[in-house]
Length: 240
Image 1 (cartoon, rainbow, N blue to C red):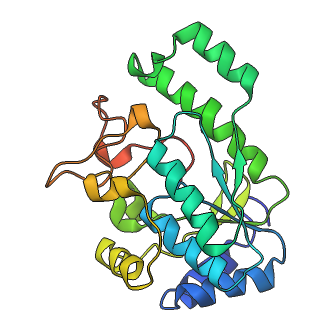
Image 2: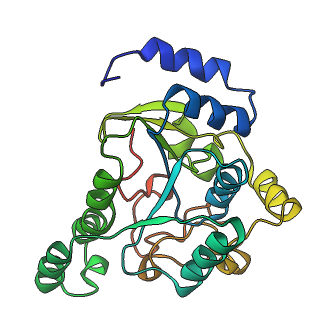
């Protein structure tokens, strides 16, 4: 599948799987794209739901995370707890040390606070480049995106062609509500990051994430010092 190719097939899948449960969606992706399906987790509450299904049903889906080097200790804790509970290994992709050195020496250790350009450069070095390596030679990229997370993400579908990374993206939780996610987590005793209960509903790098206040948008805690539209705050991993 290439950019612009099989758009009709993707449209058919979006219609076919719209009311299908997540287990069937993931199972069918494994059957159609054997050993070529990967799931990226940032250990947010949505990602833990998907990890639960992959691990419980021993699906042939590689789980990986982008360790930026600026993550919360609480994220490392739930990472370790998840591996122990399910008996799995979650692969880590790190930024290139030379890229990090050059960036820090140029803009400073916290230069991302100074401009959106600097922040996007940091995201590119610590997230986007490692993701490119993680997705290499894969056919399907599973994510924990939900439409309810932001105005920008309301435009996403369950299946999409990602032109930037040249891969089909599958968002099996796209129609789930936050209440449904929380209910599933508690009902199935799924490990989740303790920061969530403190208002960190969307967890990124530690210097770039704060808890949200009552009434604030879901992703208001990300890059909170920027004046950009709250609904369009993205690091560049998920663009349409």
